[in-house]
Image (tube, rainbow, N blue to C red; front, top):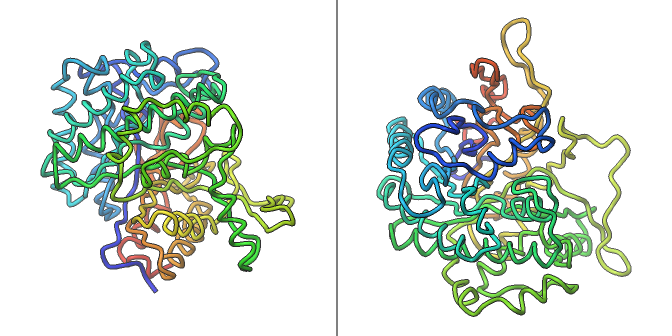
Length: 450
């Protein structure tokens, strides 16, 4: 019982969360610079100005990955480090920094998986409307072209967007992330269809710049799992996973994937969002077929249980005292079986688990080590469920732990620790946790030790 021989084992990070160097190397401002520096938006007023200082300590980070025998690294490029103003003149210093980093990864035997947009939109584009402005989608395509041309022959795997559901649903609809808007459902969907338009244009730009490149997207969404193994409950969970209703569409996989894979927007029950769909310009509708992907990334943390009811799917109440992480997210290993299974059934595409992990109350113990048995137990349970899904026919090609190291956790600041590597934020010193050694054994045995 193991994963396929060519299964990819890696870890993941995002530019604003780890790089720091916010005002160095010609980098422009991002919406997260603006949002984090606005009082009240992050816990403790924390910002990503320094973060883990990976902008300077990237060689050390690669050595850490080598010590864990990682086969791949999923990282994001900071758009404002390439185009400080979002478009126009390329910042060659920023492009050269990433080029050196990619070369070093390859020299270390680590395959780069590049995410082009992990929420750090250049502030200059936000000032012109951000994802409410179709010109941002076109600027994204140009940025994708420039990065791909630079990496051609060295990078094969690209994710255009990371969790657009969060960037748009939380950032434009709920004020809890950058840019911090509180728009109604119709306006939020306007930003949504623009970011999907941007994906489509960027996917076409990547393939034109490098015909050998493979293109994916890493969305997130509601995962529903069946209360029992009965066919009725399984079908109820499947229906609930892909249900689209006004006001709820922001956290569904199919709000993105149906448009991208099937080439047309799905119907959304209700009023506001569907009215926007009915009025999408012909130019943007015509771009949907350009957005077809070679694989899907899934960021999986938890799920909700569903049973078949008399009037359709019913959500089950969680048990009293249900297990949860330090950030108060439920622990539901079954999500790693049913989520990929349902998406693979619906779209027929290979899947990578692009994020999975948990926040723990980690600390350096008296012996100088970081003992995190909760993380090891969490990963063990989730990877067992993933392996079961692979054995039952779900085409999962790889797993990227979130995250390589502790980092800036958006509005939570530095309060949450998701890493395999502990970061002391006063010195930026790194200490691999016990879970890093455990994960190394998983990599070395291709999961046979689970």
